Amino acid sequence: MPDIIQLLSDHIANQIAAGEVIQRPASAVKELLENAIDAGATEVQLVLKDAGKELVQVIDNGSGMSPTDARMSFERHATSKIRDINDLFSIRTMGFRGEALASIAAVAQVEMKTRKQESETGSHLVIEATEVKKQEPCAAPQGTNIMVKNLFFNVPARRHFLKSNTTEYRHIVDEFTRVALAHPQVAFRLWHNGVEQYHLEAGNLKTRIKGLLGNAYEKNLVPVEEKTEFLNISGFIGKPEAATRTRGMQFFFINNRFIRSAYLHHALVQAYEGLIEKEAFPFYVLFLEIDPARVDVNVHPTKQEVKFEDDRLMYAYLNAAVKHALAKYNIAPSLDFTLSPEIQQLSSVQMPVTQDSRQETEKGYLFNTFTQKNQAHLAVKKDSLREWKELYKIADDIAEQQTQADSANMVTAPSLHKEPETVNAKGIISIQGSMLVTTVKSGLMLIHIRRAQERIWYERLLAEWNNGSTPSQQLLFPLSYETSAQDALLLTETLADLSRIGFDISPFGQNTFVVQGVPTELPAGEEKHVLDEVIEQLKHEAPDAVAKRAETLLANMARRLSRNMGGLQYQEGQQALIDELFACSQPEYAPDGRKVFTLVKKEDLEGMLG
Image 1 (cartoon, rainbow, N blue to C red):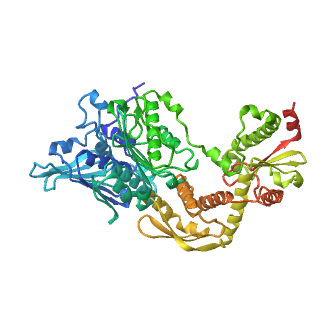
Image 2: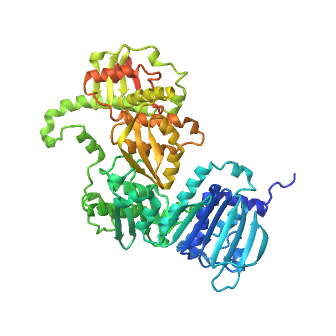
Image 3: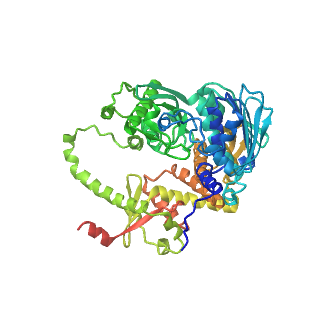
């Protein structure tokens, strides 16, 4: 039997390697922009055509390359940054592995002109699918001008899976924003299909944030500046009132390199505890300077994930730095930043009031000023309440464990409301304002109030949508809604659908919209919250979910409106909620597929009591 294992050709191997580094046009943009920064450029221009699918061009005034270096730069693992293994652990440049240009050249048609300052002529290089088609002297300004044409022209399967131009352009803007934020001392310009989208002058971080993200962020910036022997932290965080329900405006840079870290994000958000809602995301652009030997940036092809020598110490310093910055502006209790490396000392820091305690106070629960020993006479009442809480927990666990598969089976599953249980109107009990319990023929029915309200509102809005008669009210004073460039693209995509549910929104300058009308049911002050949630939903929308976008919008609206329903402290309101719920076509499930109610049979109750 002949041998079957063979070495791959260089052409195939390069395409496989390219798939790890270059997934979409935004990947090429990132690599080329970082190359320009590493070359010492002070001015960088990015030119795009068809969201980078047809053309990605980066022009810089950096150091340029000699003809030999220009040719070598397209070879795999050819780099000017590393000479021995120790260099890998002290790297401060953006690129260092020598894979970017080789990967791009494997899947695109590349043309480059480059010249060093001391050279009289430059070098013109044309490469197609790793094959050098031409290299000759040329006239060129100092720096490098590289054009990447027809990305994935020789990998049809990869090109077929690229998304729409709007989506791909949004990913490019994401990468452009990160590089531009990391280097405010460099001037950047971006053109797309012949139209200039960004013109960013060199300056400081504050002006760069304003230029990239909009004027709305400038007034809500809180500076962060802390220096220790282990770590230096600088940048800006947002005031609590500027927190939004959309992700994307959170940026960590380690030694000027953008990274993603859920661990560090948790440290920062924990510093806002008690100051923002649980589902809100604070804005931040933070730079963490650390000895390169203490962090490994070579753990992922995109270099956006890193490993720290001491994760817990990073967490502690970042958390304390954010609290300190907030305290300086009387936003949170002050904290002495004189930290010992012993993290355990941080546990003694008094934390701000938690969100849970705020919610309890807002609901009007009595604040308990009794000492523990003076509460002995409440023991019996506590035991009774504990039993009810246990019953509530059982119902909530059942509801939370219900997956989306339940929603898919709604049509075929036995429908409880088709054989209605008789609800005892006089026996409705509210548990902590979250659950209604009432007796039915077979035992107890537990109803999740918020989900019931969402179902009711969803079916009302859906009926209006289908009838084409969604009522809208014009605002006496139109609202200005400013967002990031990425979010503006998403919102523009869905303006027609928003109009059908009662919003009157139109573009009003770069990354700004004017809201002139809103759905009549929407309470005042909720307009921006709804738009934030719509954008957040669109960010995580599945590729095949465009057809269901209307349902998603209606579900978001229903969720927001359900938070403003009142009257449930009275039995009449509770009964009305139950009546409306069982008048719905699908009362068993909330719009997102979670169960609204469940039945606890009498036999099960008896079993609980032994």
